[in-house]
Image 1: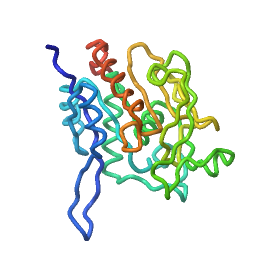
Image 2: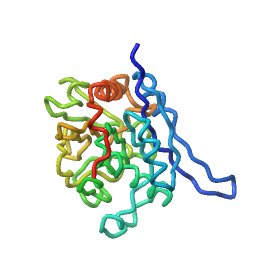
Image 3: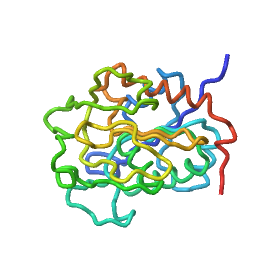
Image 4: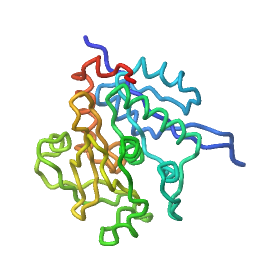
Length: 249
């Protein structure tokens, strides 16, 4: 019986507060979805030593970058917008170091929400910092009063997303105020909201399985069909060439 792939998950981080000590956490939907798809989830806290990050990645066959707060746009040469709610600096420092090593290894990676945004900016793309201002004609992509808020999705034929959803009518959850603007070189858009907002990207590089979704297929508001994205990812890991995960300069 073939061994199940070990798939990493980056943990979110909350510093010490009056109500409790500092802690790392991962919403259960992420590791439940990986396990259901045939992988073994391995949660990685925000490590500070890059050598330790490399040592853990040596043991893994893939990685899922979880959602969370906003990336600090100043790290990518942009001004801080008043709507930005940055993730904790310790997590962001870790996530960026982690993404750098994942990319250099060409390790299979699936970025979700902020994870997709990190995948895009780390490879040379950029973001809309606040959709209501940057794309005022767009439909609402977050409703604080409705965690089940959903919108339509148009997919690109021949993509991983199309293999999951087919040509049926699709609706996915929506809980973001930022989105991909310019897509990184080596990636293509594989799904959009009908208003034009990018909802999924995939690598066009033959040696790298790298996908991202702005929506959250791991959340309680996801459909059974959404979860199949994890199955496609795990199957893709099984097909990935071991040489593709060796660290390159």
